[in-house]
Length: 366
Ligand SMILES: *Cc1c(COP(=O)(O)O)cnc(C)c1O
View (cartoon, protein in one colour):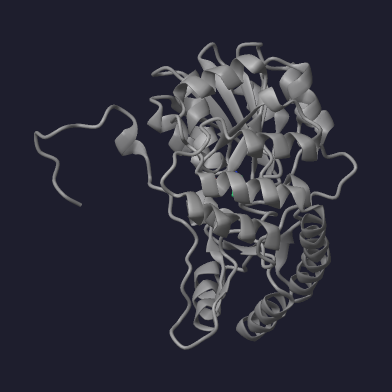
């Protein structure tokens, strides 16, 4: 680390940030790479989205439409939403940051859970806010623990539902109970990055809550089920006043023309989304069962990834497993930074990748 002298000093909070470390994307030389480290879809994007992205190359000199109208209209159509209540971002990460920038003054508090998505901490610190961590029960967010952390300085509660990296979720009844316990000036951010994958009768992403309450916002992404992580597209659905605040703070052209075009095409291709979800449903169940049959504990997941826990003896820990798998081309995600030093997160991949990981772990444990 370089020594800090008397040059410019970042504002308070910035140097408390541990920079986000993305999932690895390289395997050992000479082996086929199966990237299972960032929850990308093995099926890739819709062909219509690829075409729209390529066509955007013909118009690179012009600024994009700063309101991302075509994309917002496509999202509104797909989900039956009000177009004025949608705002798009350069990935939903940007929106999570915009929320912190817009609602946290220095010293204000944002609450998130013990194994919650790391961007919440980064966005809070970057805005000068104070991160407040609520304990989880059984690797699942707990409404009472969150409510117990609310103070007069609380301005935001970030909840990933389902959560990454645990794959667990809160039923809508619990989300409503959480909201009911929050003061009206606290913004409840429902990060529903994996909503499309969830197959549970008691799950809702939060659209109806946004429509009913002035202090609930839902964020979504094109990086997961739509297979467009490289293009960086996120969006949120929120009350008019919240959308107005975010529109004042965001960059005027925060979503590129290629992103607008590719996203609008992707969300219109329902068949492709259904195919991705069906693939995940089949292989999430198969992989979870197969790993459990090896004696590994797998946290029950409703997303497109699973959290695998390793026994911590005889060199069979998560670090050893990670090295063993990487040498064979299977790149999973270390989650030590999430307070889970002896687990790995595995994205549900192609049939070949899922079978390969199970076979490799059988060899590792045997
Ligand atoms: C992947 C992910 C996101 C999405 O990030 P983008 O910036 O849209 O790519 C947001 N929240 C959670 C919990 C995620 O896992």
